[in-house]
Each structure stands twice: as structure tokens, then as C-alpha cells.
Amino acid sequence: MRIHYYATLREVTKTREETWTGPEKTLGELLDALCKKYGPSFQKWVAQDGHGSLAIFLVNGQDYRSLDGLETRLSPEDTVSIFPPVAGG
Image (cartoon, rainbow, N blue to C red; front, side, top):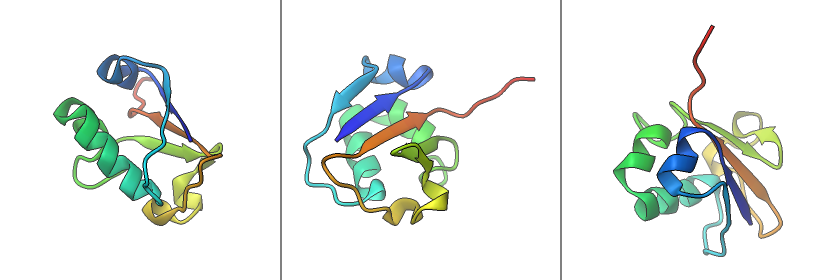
């Protein structure tokens, strides 16, 4: 699957996107694996007080909250986009 990172997460991961071939079957499992790979700097954006409390996750362009949340099933053809929190005015 393809994973796209935006804004601050590009600095943390040192990439705009990557191809993921891990065994993770759900969005929650993928996020756990990414937190292990990229460490606390990544985890603080996506897992503070539980996954998704700060970041925005899209699976194939759809907000994960309108799907099955962290239980959203993933396949090798999917694209996951991860955005850090947005602020401004």
C-alpha cells in the first residue's frame, strides 16, 4: 500500500510517501507499526491520547471516521494519507 505524509510528518519521516508491505490488516495496526518505526516524534502527532486524536487519516481519500475507524480493513492496493493537525485562521 502507499502511505502519504503531509506537513510536519514529512519532516519526521524524511519522506513524502512510502510503499508499505507489512502484514498489518487494519488502520490501527498500521499506525502502531508506523509509531514503532518512526518513534516518539511521529507518535506524538498520531497517537496522543489514542490514535487519531490529533491527526487526520484518509483511506483511499475517505476519512477513516466515516469508514470503520481504526478497524478499517486495509489491502495492498490502498492509499493511506496522514495529515498532522491543522491550525490557523
